[in-house]
Amino acid sequence: MTTVSYKIFTPSDYTQQRWKNGRGTTVELVKQDKKGSADESAFAWRLSMATLAEDGDYSSFPSIDRTQVMLQGSEVQLEISTSKESKQAQSLNNSYTLTPLKHIAFSGEDAVSCHLPNKDNASMFNVMSDSTYGRHQVEVIKSNDLEKTPIECDLLVVFVVNGGLSITLNGDNCLLSEHHLLQVNVEKAPLSITTAHSITPSSLILVKFFHH
Image (tube, rainbow, N blue to C red; front, top):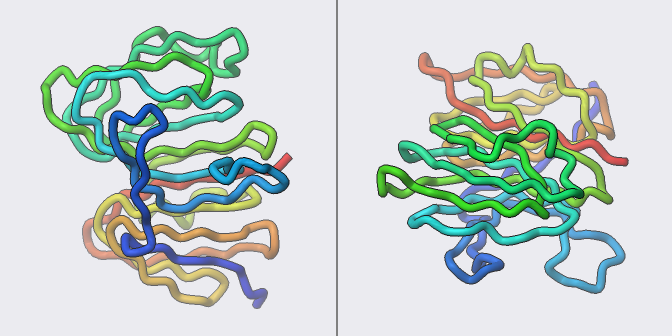
């Protein structure tokens, strides 16, 4: 059986960073640096988590495609003004409501503001990818559906929202707990996935990256 290249990241691997607009902090889970860039903060793609504690505007990230998944909280209302350059312009309304495990894609050029109608904090999972690198796709599934989910991409990331599970990749067993992250280089080898989980299936976020 072909060996598959993968890495497992746990909360002890994650780092905190200030938001670009200085109004809060984000927990960076993992990223791929942008090759050939003189800017040390530039990335081809990045995954992170952040807590929204007050109403406010999102930072601007030109040339970055974004997807946000709500992890915890009651409700987040987003107001989005799409830019002329936005590739999401045909698929977004001006306002959008997120509840746990719901997600939305938008462009880094868009003007985005958030409102917490119930005044409680909201935890968010964030995916960003440089449009010159490729594109990404996000799915939220239950662990018992992972084996049936098509894995047709160059790079796959599995993030465990809650619970835990065992994933077997081409015969290699990986144990994942809550907020663990599995990064799999799919383009290097055909991928066969099987899972074992508790009676209550875990919620998973799948992020698929496609290179240009």
